[in-house]
Image (cartoon, rainbow, N blue to C red):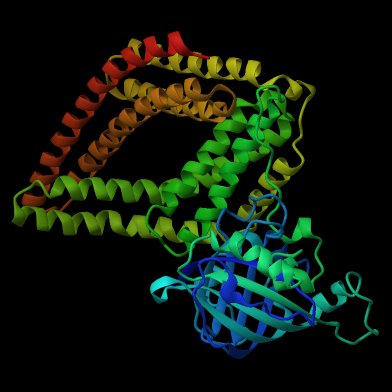
Length: 536
């Protein structure tokens, strides 16, 4: 597993002849340590089209210094968020940095590669830049000897490698002779917090500026040497916040952007088999699909249908291992209520019966996550976000259109509830309640999407829908567990004690389903009255 840290720093462009100022004059700095010199050499990896750099992601292998190894840097807020400044300007950068041992020079460690596969999307990361840095570090100390920050004075020599050399020759400084690698030299300062607070940055600003330092135009050395425009060297500009007077399309754009960010954020967790990653990515997938369905009349029908179908596919792939894990956890918990000797035997049997199918589902998910279909879905979502295929109606005022969207989802939920009330028991009734759950989920997601223009009212509706969804989720899990236990209990050659325990567990699920349904009836009556009175 890669080691992680969050770096908070600010970069400055500075002339070759500038003198490092008296850093002890910075308010809060009591002492400056003796300067320490390191020679660093780093090779940066990216695609020929600079896929990672365009998202303010840097992947490098560095030798020299105390942190030699592989480094991956990601913006804390998410690679598609931010103001497009690439870390330049008055605000310091906050980046998540992951480390891995040096390993082999040309082989990116799996622990880091997992974090960028969703951006590479089938392309290979190859060496694009080699940097040699002569770094002089000044440690800044505060009261009681606290190590506040480090000021790094970097003299950098950069060389474009491979395809980057050819691409880079068309931008930036004067082109090098054909066949000759482009090189650049510059000097920059980096002020990075260690144990100090962000207030140190404005405190240091005046002294550094007086020495000739200017806020850096690029967020990383890689972006600088590739000569990417500042608007591309940082995170892509996020969608503007929806306004009450803005178009209804802004609501979907903002909500969909959040879900895409969530999908990309949780993608590595699935590859690294982190707890809850499947659940979190599945939830984001469901939200995106719900929102597209709710807003579909404002967009090209074919585009919405295609994305909806692909999101449904991803949801199914995620759902199989997630549902298997939920079911196994549920039955483990209820097995613990059995007598100890019997509980142990049943637990082992459950692991044998369900564990294999869960593991197989996880393997299929891992394969899907490196498939062209998955990467094309990510491309499609971002293309929809960047160039929404809107219809004329998408220009309707957001606040007024949102009322109709929420009302439509609420009516859909009410119709499903009436259908469930007309059925009394059995599979038909259980299917009807499952539909209520799905429609409650859709209302919740639609209400969440209109919160920017309807605030607390929308939040209350989302919470009411969520309560129904959660209760009926428990009901559905009990029904599935009940049917599964009935099937397991009927297996041939099953030890009598285990079969008896399965029957006991089956009875428990029947009881839990009845309790959940009774709770739903109470909640539905309360929510029904609430939704009728407060739908926006």
